[in-house]
Length: 106
Image 1: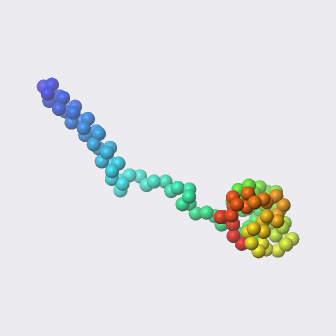
Image 2: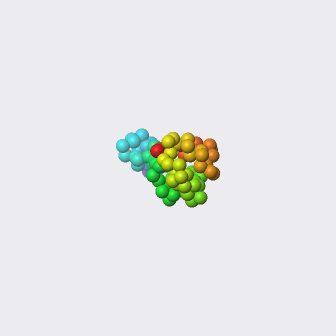
Image 3: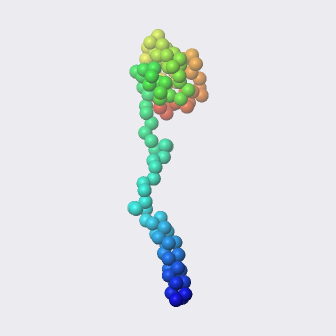
């Protein structure tokens, strides 16, 4: 009787080890992987038409005061001719521009 019991225990242990390994090797049955942030779509901010709320929400380092300065500059000088012209806005430096360059368009 002990030989049959040991055989059953050995079979149970081997089966329990084999099932997770089999499930992990079958990618169709596994849960889909999360989409990395790098593949997420980047929102484009059109600096010639965006309102203060959009500028504040979408751009890093741009709060309500800098957003208002961007809009005031745009109102005073006309539409931006290039993204680099943001450097002319008081409070916008090279570091802020570079953090946001990939999101900016005219």
